[in-house]
Image 1 (cartoon, rainbow, N blue to C red):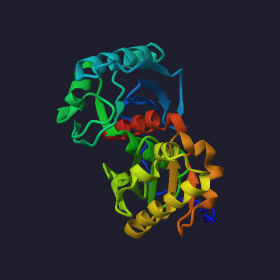
Image 2 (spheres, rainbow, N blue to C red; image 1 turned 60 degrees about the horizontal axis):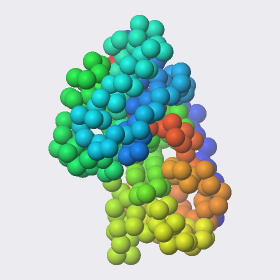
Image 3 (cartoon, rainbow, N blue to C red; image 1 turned 45 degrees about the vertical axis):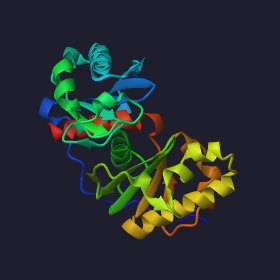
Length: 278
């Protein structure tokens, strides 16, 4: 059986900076770029909740930098219409399905390969007219869980693993992100871990929950051996069914389902952008 959820310490981890201080507001803007849809919303950075309706526009095909940036501009403008002063000057956080180094995409998953080695941050800042911070999508979700969700107040090493088409990961120490960890590609039993332990692999191989849990246990045991985390958080759509597989995992580390689910990318990106430009 998986260990019980740890009790969060009475004091928060290395505190997340107070968001939004540079503009005198606790509101941020988050945009989540995915292979099928681009979503955005204003975020109350005190609570981690959307402060107005989410906007979603299908990802253009082909998803070139020019086409995607036009959609992002449109979404930011729609969000601005819901905010005082049109949201002028608010930092915009943007998730992107890629390794992101200093605003530059080094890979491209589920988007046009023209993004590889492209300066995403500079383009998005130019088209939106806002300060922009770009972050890997799993990293944004991890930060959201650390600030507002399942890992809030947990000190030490926290690992988020999103189980979907692949396995995305985020690693944080006392709430501080170590970006671009890509631990879904660990080799386990001679295989790239996400080819055997992702939710897509479960569906592809028609695995029972118990059989899939055995594969997940091996994967998470590899993470334990490398990182000795204090908490593992499981995200992705399948985390809604966590009761079917989390109790089957054989781990020494407490493991819990994510809480923010589909809002995590937007919320985490908004928080990071506000911290970046505070």
